[in-house]
Structures are given as structure tokens and as C-alpha cells.
Amino acid sequence: MPESKIIQSENTIPWEDLGGGLSRQVYGYNDQLMMVKVRFEAGGIGTLHSHPHTQVTYVAAGRFEATIGEVKQLISAGDGFYVPPHVVHGVVCLEAGMLIDSFNPAREDFL
Image 1: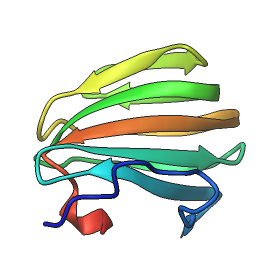
Image 2: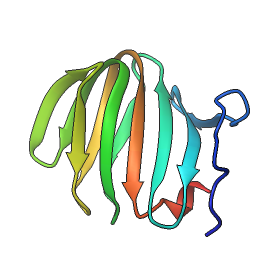
Image 3: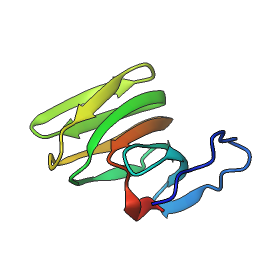
Image 4: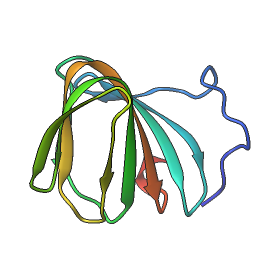
């Protein structure tokens, strides 16, 4: 996997429309690490899923109902969550917002 540019500018990274009120920008990455910004419209759903990557997410804006394994909790700007590999997780956006996801290793399926 190639590495990203050293500096990423929000204005030059294309938004990928994921449908259902979600879109994402892929920021810095190499084969070990990736950061992704995900924009949610109110009512947008990050469908329950799992993957072999470790994930850490920061809530930059908005309010969400997060489900990580058996845990379901309301989270908002300034909060975050950790997802171990293979754990089912997802979010429902209650108030338009933005999540910043980091993955290890990088999500090759996003490139």
C-alpha cells in the first residue's frame, strides 16, 4: 500500500458519498495506520458491522447513539470510543455531526 502525502488539506481531499446521509474523507495513511473523517446528517446510520482492524473514534461534532459489542450509549462532541478487532459496532446520528476514525492496520478497502 502506498503512503499518503505528508500534509493533507481538507480542501483538496475529495468527499466520498456513502449514501444514507454519510460521506467520508480519507486522510493520512500507510499500511499500519489510517485516519478517516466521516460526516453524518441527522438520522444517518453507520450500520452495525465488524472488521479485523482496531479502531479508535473521536466525536468532533454532533450526537450519536453508539453500539460497541453489548454496550449502547449516547455520545457527543468531545467523546470517543475504542473498538477491538472483530467486535460488532455502529452508530445512529441523532444530531448532524462528524466522527474522526483511526484504524490499525489501514483499511485497504477504503482506498
